Amino acid sequence: MMNRMGRYFQIESHQTTWRRELMAGLTSFFTCSYIILVNPLILQDAGVPLSAGIVATLAASIAGCLLMALWANAPVILIPGMGINAFFSYTMVQSMGLTPQQGLAVIILSGIIFFLVAISPAGMRLMAAVPDSLKHGITAGIGLLLTFIGLQKGGIIEADSTTVLTLGNLASPVTLSTVIGLIVTFMLVARNTRGGLLIGLLTTAILILIIEPGIAAGTETLDLQAYRQLFNSAEFSMLRLPFWMAAFSITMIVLFENMGLLSGMLSDPAKFPRAFKSAAVSTMLSGLFGTSPTVAAAESASGISEGAKTGIPALVTAVLFALCAFVLPYVQYIPGNAVAPVLIVVGALMMKSIAAIKFEDFTEWLPAFLIIVCIPLTLSIADGLSFGFIAYPLVKIAVGKWREVSPFLYVTAFLFLLNLIALFLYNH
Image 1 (cartoon, rainbow, N blue to C red):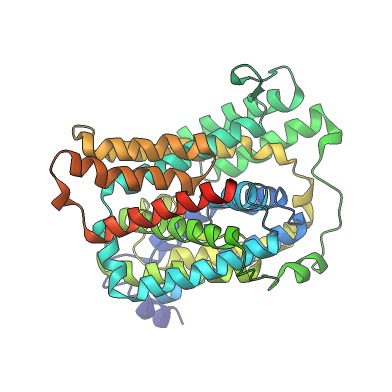
Image 2: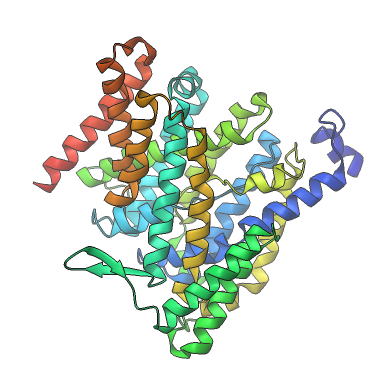
């Protein structure tokens, strides 16, 4: 059995060992396991029942990891993306007025478009056309957005009528618990503690429940009935403009985020095509299962740093996610505010991408800078991408370097411009 699996995953040709791959799988799981708690709490803000969100998160994560393990044989974990889940809840549902079911239909449609791009020659050309500065800007911008949301959820910052934002009440139970939990999480992550994010989240939750017991997330019974109503509940409202605007935005986000993360993490470029297609299929399945899109998790780097080279870590992670079903009844007692330290720390880790931007070239770092600041300041990943992708060809033309811009990028910039125009017309 082990020999057959070893041949399937090409253990010897990858010059690795079962022990190394299994340990990398454990590391990857504990690094990204926080998503089991975080994603449902964010989806809850879109009206998705907590019970259903938990099951949907596990189902999509298991399916995505199995795809990456068995099809792509790549040491990459696919889980619901941080940032995209916020876009789903706060932009698509709360701002654009889509129902959760219409949002799930948007995700399925985006996954189909993503897959068509991934299987066509245009997919590889588009990857080559997008400059690294924009890819790194996307990662850093999403990280800054997550940090902003975390600071808000934890009460560390709050709205102010005069200055827009101000420091929150640090004496409040939630904020005090967030600050202590954040310190604990910082220390654990700094020490490279496995499962540090999950431990930090649980520490914050316990502190909140001790200081203010009545703030628990809910007391609903965790059963499958709510999930049955969520599974395969997509509503394709094809005649609504917001539906198509959301579809364009989600497609651009999953396309470029997966492209950037996979190209940055896979040491073997030969694995990219199947990994990219796996991410596309997993996006479609996410909408079917009832959650925001899965993406190649940045936390996969923890397993890769352990020496992982095959799909075994993704397989191990899928199995461990399945085993988590036995502890689901206790998840409902986690206060929604407890997710704040995880969002802040994950955002900080994603901000490391700015180190790879060429700051000596104004035409490279200015568009990336616009993406980084516009994503959190507009509270929209799609709008942030629009400003950066439109600015890139403009600054290149301004200095006479228009030949450095691929025709694919000119077309992409034009599509982003059309999206902004459609958004303006829709709001007016």
